[in-house]
Length: 156
Ligand SMILES: [Zn+2]
Figure (cartoon, rainbow, N blue to C red):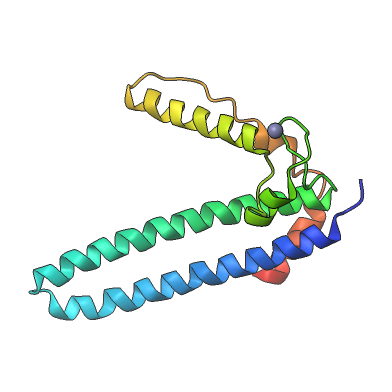
């Protein structure tokens, strides 16, 4: 299938924006850490610093997850399958792609996946081992490796 140039361009911009956001947060965190070591005796400040850092860390974590999804969506768009649900194949509504350009699942399948993950977490908390059939990563990504690596080299 033809490469979806428009979608790829949009996703690459989103990837750059997300990378910049992560970089900003890392810089902010670095700036927060340094002055804190000078005023170790102020326990309130230290506590709130730790709290702020925890918030930033989880923000960075979620941006990194998003980045991972964007990379995946770029691979999908490179092979012309962007905009269709990876799981059931229906067309993902334009409004959803507008809000979540990195998504490769329709709402129903995304919810199903989310529920599966949640159920897995609950079961893991119960200490009940359970196989999670995550085959989504292997199916795609092989076909456009050359293009993908080339891009990565330019970026980094
Ligand atoms: Zn679906």
